[in-house]
Length: 349
Image (cartoon, rainbow, N blue to C red; front, top):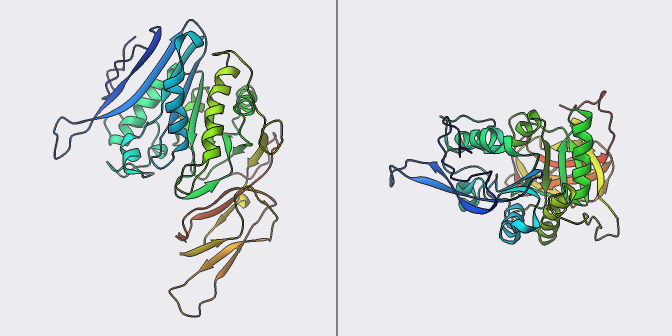
């Protein structure tokens, strides 16, 4: 199989049809002051044996999200061809420049790669990489598991997530995959800016697309890593790529994932001004509409009273604010509620 189409500038020497284990680096060109012929090396591991589905695991799309890269790297070291019936593609560090800089955005071009899909082979570094992921990697996959956390900007309840896709069969299969992954929550959501994400490219191809949010606040969440590692193996079991049944028990005694949704703009609490935000709840807390979500302080102004921000919906905190200082228009909380499959009358934006 050709390693990459002629219109991609990224070189990939993996033979995706070859049996066994292959580990190497994609080479993305990056001319810079210190190296006119420089490249960026992006790790990729492929394990293939016999016939069966192809499972794609990606991590590090944002460089300050750690649990996914840890979980996928461990899987890539542990998985052996004799365990597999099918193919597993593992990319634990997609956006390696951002990972090395510990930033959400690429330090090369300032882009959030997860807002520039399907990309452009002749564009900036992030656009070029997005194009490669969409045009070379995604067509191989039967299911994509793109592992994220909330980085430095939020904390998150440990969860998988998905869009409410219109195709009923794909939606049913994605809900089943989320249940198999086995995070405490699965959130079906309509986001603020979703059309240019990796998820949107997966969905346009009719492929099962599952994301995760496994922590945040700029640290490694111990339970998030455990859920992520177990979830990778659970997906492989669910897809029949390795033997066994998914393990979905939760530490609180629950037997399975709870499906939730974020369907309407009222699920979001936005800051109306710049200031220092003091939240009142941790993620996972039950809250009610009208309850105080936090206080926006203006500590640089003597005797200035804080603004009181309130929730507009009953539910459970999915995302809570990370850094204390927020800008006008920043989301400081997102509330999830019980899942309903019929979104025909939803107010999602």
